[in-house]
Image (tube, rainbow, N blue to C red; front, side, top):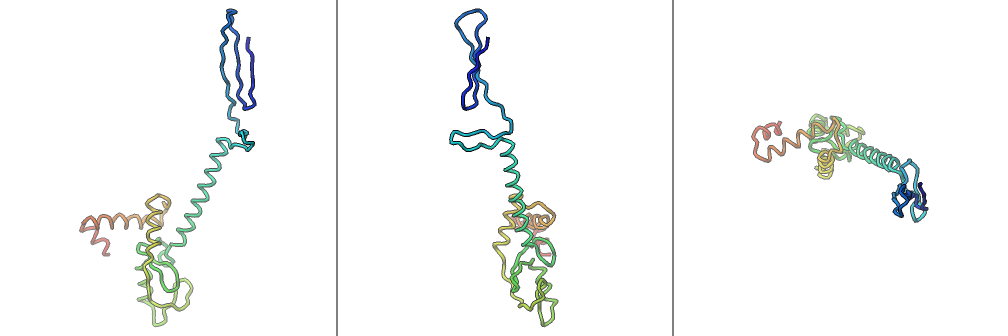
Length: 175
């Protein structure tokens, strides 16, 4: 014969009477099963189920990935349409790959204009160190894994080889 005792916490204890009429009872505890529904906590708030937690994490990760993608799009050179290997800020306030904007400046007539806005601008280029550090960190962490990052990944690897003394990498970087 079995006796049940339910607790307000959702735990149910079943007591089974022995068949040999001894005074020893077997006690076993049944915990409530996950049903996907919210369980009440002691403070009265609802606790998320495992499925809800997973969905919440997925949505958060999706938002983060979307934000990172938007930041990376801002850094894409408007001339080469790739992530800049050596990012610089031109006088129009935009970030470019140094080689691409330098070529634009060198081929311009006396009236140099922005490749993006077509407004007049000067030839001064300023290294965009924070942009470079940000891009390197995003690529190293794996947050950026699309085609736009492939060239930059290769250059980063080549620079490491050149810094280690590899003459071939030094030569390739010079091209």
